[in-house]
Length: 233
Image (cartoon, rainbow, N blue to C red; front, side, top):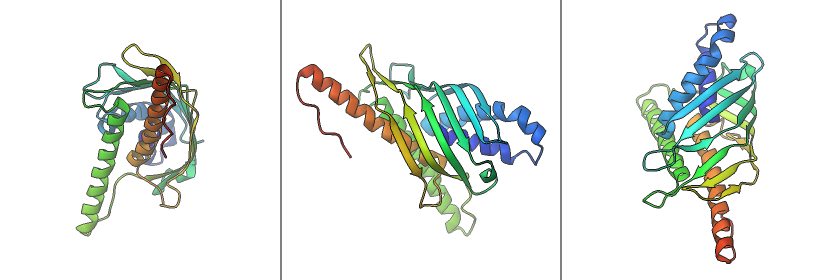
């Protein structure tokens, strides 16, 4: 949930009025509250975070116990339970229009893969929800600009490197557990002056959904004794 986390860090950091002592004490409860609330809105699914340990002074930190619930229409309670989410930001960018993320590493996420009645997976639905949020935000910015106002909205993000490793994918209900290959995305928002957090999140969800679909297809092909389909782009 990188985009959501960064939005919360920014909201806490920019609203402090320069009172660093307040920030040290209160920033992590604010991040936890905002990650859960913003995540639920963007994904249309429950989001829970056990603990945030982020320094707005160094830009380094970690989230622990981040869980993403399934959207409506799926039996499994969780879509993903993340191990640790480690991040390093450029603190000097907090107050600017574009926040620079140096690294973001998701360690050992446990992902549940479930097909709904319409045939789409739970990951597909979460991705669709994030894309819809990003689209609505873009339309709102364009409408404000058309009225002669400032585009407004949240700060944009550039992410140098995002890594997801040691991910497992469990097929629901009661299916096999598969191992996903290491996922690395680089240069998110580069060349565009940054992207909104909801769009950055959609990019990550899209990559995870594609990797999950390929792993499931290869698993089913192995069970059937047929060659797996060629990976998509």
